[in-house]
Length: 456
Ligand SMILES: *Cc1c(COP(=O)(O)O)cnc(C)c1O
Image (cartoon, rainbow, N blue to C red; front, side, top):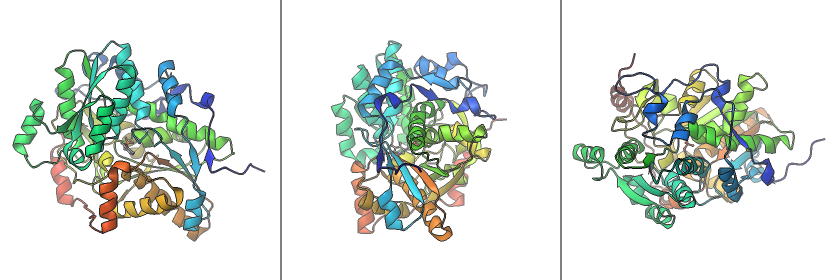
């Protein structure tokens, strides 16, 4: 008989993985290479190192090395906030009256309130090791900027964060937190860059977007000495660093002879989902097991469920490399949906390829339904989830409800990426009944698709 599963499964410090797992090594169809936006030729190492820290570029381009060692300095810092708990949602199961067994991996136990510190520490470490003195980045909801500020203060690097204007206005305390860690925060679009000034001139009323903040941060990095740009999602290297979430989850479940029937995550740029599912997709690719994989995205920014699989820019200003991904077009500016971390027009090329090849399913959810799920969850599980994470909760609850009808004891694993203390304006509007659902029309989407570059 198997042991009774506790509410919280904690791994010991030495069970923290020593290597990240590179899912690309096991993919038969590799994610398409990044292209030079001018020549449309695959980008090589030399072209990328002026933008990103060099070691990050090597990881970005490495489709073959299955396990990549976590540097000691990074693993030591991981020990401060990891392993993160895997929680059995007994209370939620009971509340729903479902025979399903629900597990969630909680990544909100650090000041960024999200999984993002897993990658920011790695990127800051590599920058420091290379002798760089400063970094730039963008942030949507603020979690990535905070995670990067935490990492930069630890490794002694200066940081400039371009923060999407609507979040900057909605979450003033996010700026203060980044400030505590020494990060300099600028509302984007701003007049500090050429691309920002151009966007402001064309659309003075804009509330900004991740795509636009990325343009600004990249421009700033390449025009500043000893400075590089770092990105908190979408890129292959970020999915690599986040594999620690999936590796820890798998080990924790194995201690109780458990294996998920379905793995669910929210999808913005795809990093937490890519990391959570990595070892489970490995099992699918190698024929060891066949769990379902489900991405949940906002109905207001539906890149997987309504986007095109095409080469596109990662930013609004069209200065970044081209990535082949499910995209709504870099010209698509999502409505100011509260789940700021999911307001990105594209999707990780790794996840896009897996989705295209049928290894993963996707659904979209309207935000009032997402907040309903978040509220229900917080009342029984005591954690106030980030709106982004609540998309995964929504997906898990929907699956658990199906089990009520079928009587199936499905094992559900989902990623609870973070906490929502900075999202109380959104929670308040949900409680006040003033929250609205915005779903772009086909026409709105067509406009975004019109901005896709022509690549043969
Ligand atoms: C950034 C963020 C996300 C979305 O980003 P992914 O790269 O898709 O994982 C989800 N949840 C939280 C809490 C975040 O901060």
